[in-house]
Image: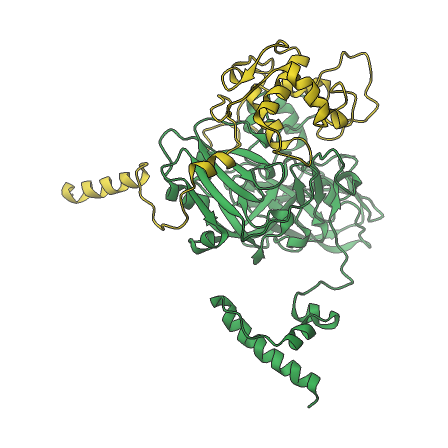
Length: 412
Length: 194
């Protein structure tokens, strides 16, 4: 056996030892030469950290093609390629990104990161990351969606119309557990959550929501939360708009009144009804195949499929129309349903080669039905030809299939 | 049913929702008062957390240039690429397109915000860009006073401090609604909304 092979065998042995030992936090004696081999370009993706196939090229794109945050530091948003996603979990590398301001991703050392809980509590507390990880945890699948996720007639693809929504498995400590540990005082009604990045982005959340199902998350899709998503700690406020899901979470302050802090200010509404629509997201769905920019090769069998979600809980039912909303058929739910999570739906379909308009609508566990733009316009008393959606836009999205098989934005 | 068995159970249940519960895990430590002071930059509309200090518009005017505010927001607080801070007289057109989220003459913070404390918090937390949280309390009071004065909300000599700032009557004080405080699990976001 040549020395190279021996090294390889020794490495595999120590690798097996590693698998058994890391759970206990003990470092194995690791031969330097074998580590070097594992990290050589040839072996790195096979052993150390896997890459996807070079033939898979799906990527995120920035909103409006802006390739970089500008010098004035305004908000910056990056869209996930929903047309390429299978199932309900968005890969962490493709999860949509939004920043409070056009700031770059902060580099935070988890060993120095702290979470403080204070304000209207009996016992203010500071936790290190290691301490948080000792507490009872849960793993849950939740979507996150930006309020700015609204389809416009000029958008071509589902990435552009709906790409500011993604879904992941999050692992962390229930916020309610931390708040009980600190002891919330009578009279408290809100919590202010704040991040550690340069502008210390911050939002105010109703205490009832904080005590219900919020998570102080350190895990995402089986590994540490990615820096673009808030490493090392992110607040998950399931079903609420993205701006409440504070990244780089460093502080929770329990308070008695609404604080109108950094991110709340940009979010205030004159109309009480619009304000009420600015927390929880309504039932929503979109067909990802066939969707804008795609091409059907010809008449025949396809499966119409897409994603549905709701801030009100589980998706109960999804219906699909292939005739522009005149008739609706119940789709099959092809994944388990979870509260405030993406659900994948599908409907077998034989295309006859004629022009048609495809639509989907979601019905959630509260029985709320995803509305059309026209229904929303009527609620607000908008002119019929110019309905305007306040708060998060959860209206039905039409895709137009032309007889040549090309698919286009039905709002155009 | 034997009430002697039920009553103690009820009492235990009530203790758990009361505020006097004791910690279960004993993990984490209490922050020192200094730590809380250093970290707590949230300013409530009533101004409870405002630090000692004071400033006037007169003091704020030179600071607006020295601290670089004018570099991005324009020398006069308008006609620039960064958000408009001082409403213009409407005679000129901004040569820059309004970057999203657009803040122009229509929604200048001093005229749009319901509370002056929101401006103090915003400047203290988020400005100057790239040098956030380097301004001293006196400087934040002076810059807030300057923007309030230039937008016609206060007088040039009005001193802004812990007491006076929360009392400023803002033009936008009635032009907003809070999100609903009474959020409940399993409830649609707005009754009768389609």
